[in-house]
Amino acid sequence: MNLAEVNRGIHKHKKKKRIGRGPGSGHGKTSGRGHKGQGQLAGWSAPAIFEGGASPLIRRIPKRGFHNAFGKTVASVNVGALSAAFADGEEVTMDSLKAKDLAKGRYDELKILGGGELTKKLKITAHRFSASALEKIQKAGGEVNVIPKKVAPRPAKSRKAAGK
Image 1 (cartoon, rainbow, N blue to C red):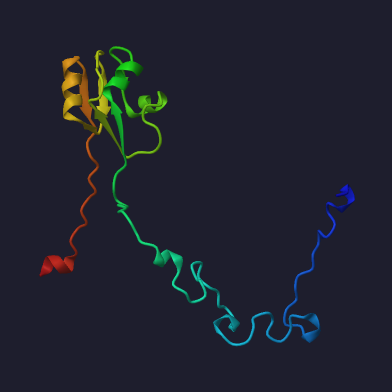
Image 2: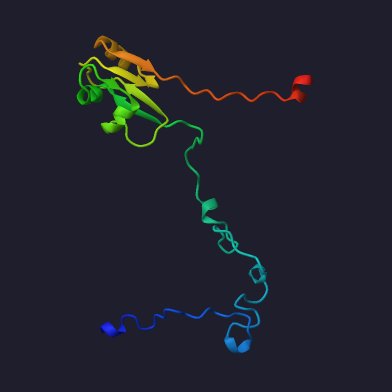
């Protein structure tokens, strides 16, 4: 291969294919849409999953599992990890855990679990605590602060429903 041949056949300003401009163009009469069928009509385009009338792959393969769109993502941290990362008397919050790379990624709630040993007196703020974690924190002389759950307000009843 020569260096001069690298860009051969590549045109910077390629002319647009002009369809429906007579038989001499090679794309006249049906304008590349063929004879009959749904594809001949203006404005028709196949859906992304369309496979020529065959049952699409997305409908053929079995669906497994369950996905809860309203479920909460819970990050969990063991008390042993807190004991290793924090000094005695320090305050443990979601921001401080993120700073020390103990609770990575996005999550809705933080849960403290009882894995490992806690030897330091810590003030821990989280959404949830396991029973064993609570026991170990209190045994070490630490403090627990539970973040209250966010409760969505209930919609008010309409006047029509209240009048019945």
